[in-house]
Image (tube, rainbow, N blue to C red; front, side, top):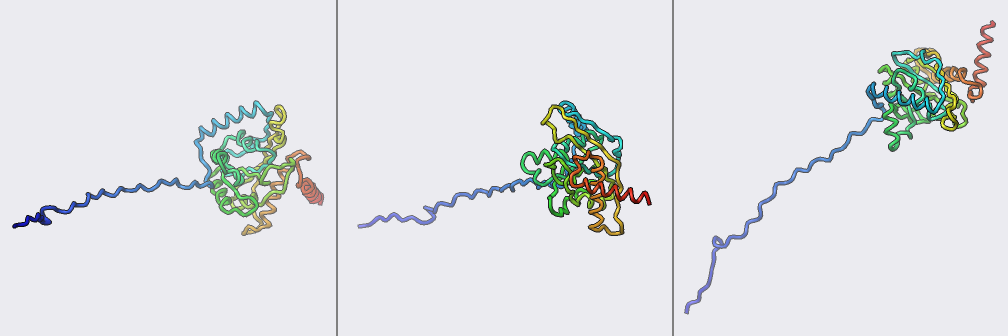
Amino acid sequence: MTQNINTTTSSENPEPSPPPTQPARRVKPEKTRPEKNLYQPYFMPMFMWRSIRFVVRIFLAIFLDVHVVGQQIVPETGPLIIASNHLSWIDVPLIPAYLKRRVVYMAKEETFKGLGGRFVRFLGAFPVRRGEADRQSLRAAEEQLKAGLILCIFPEGTRSKIHTLAQAHAGLGMIALHSRAPVLPVAIWGSENAFKKFRPRIDLVFGEPMILTAKGKKITREDIDETTEQVMLHITSMLPPRYRGVYAEKLVDEETIVEDASTE
């Protein structure tokens, strides 16, 4: 009796081969937007600047009664620091609306948050941290002046809630002395009534440019404070008495010293 045993070799029934491996997919690196340098103001084309200025002028003419004095004094070329008192948000577009040249601004850091921050930067502003020595902001200011632009500063640092001059910060004197750019004082009054009354009168007065220098070869803290004070007293003299605030008595003392010196 024979027993049939079905035997198969490994060659007759080979083990199933593993499925072909898929080529590894190349993972594209995620695109990351470069971080914006807020200390570099947006530089809009001149035709766009003029168009915006034209629209702002029409807007101001409809809603406000603006009286401008001394705009012909503003130098047509070269670096310039405009230092102005600050009563209302309307002061920001008011100054460049009556200038032929573009203006860049130092604006408080909080302004650059959210959608409004993009608009502020679009208008040519860069941030400054108030209440401390913001060296990055100071360097940015000096770079704009080296490029021959107009830098507008509100030395008080914020709008005056009581509509009178407050003590100025030392940043103005620091930038003026380090850049050696002339400072043009500007006085504004009546802007605190903007959109609270029908076409309120607003006066915008441009003063004579001031060339400010340190006493010695090195710039000292005393030089910075005296330079800031000198500009603020000039602005004070251009304002009506009710707007002079903390500088009212200082102006009287300064005028008394000048009178005494002239009589000697």
